[in-house]
Length: 194
Image (cartoon, rainbow, N blue to C red; front, side, top):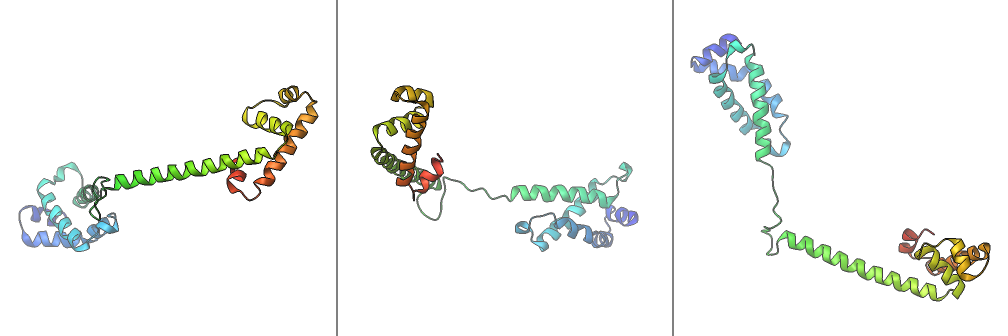
């Protein structure tokens, strides 16, 4: 291999062709590192052969690196750089398919999603208010105080002027009625696992 490299460095065309032929397995092996969407075998082979011929001018045998190793390192960097350059960037401002930029479509989707979430939330609040209307006053005070105002059962018992166990019963019975009203409501089941 050394003789071929030296002859190719001296400008021998036959030696250059022989060198490329000898390094062909390395070229094809290195091509496997290139992602398929960028891999045009003929173009890569030609470009690799040109790089090898250029490397003949910068190769220095005195640095104790074999020519195939030198080629391998340089082809590796070439392929990595090539993949960086061929990355596709999508702009949110440009959209060739229609006149509306992609960024505006995303914002519209977000706004529509927020509006539908607002409507769902409002419907759920109305449903909760309707369910609370079915409770007795003591049950309503117990449920609202415990779940919405974060009061303890002892505080609720003092509010209702009853025993601790009676306050627990008011809260439990109130929640059972609310659950019955929301029996088929998935939002309630997912949000209020009470």
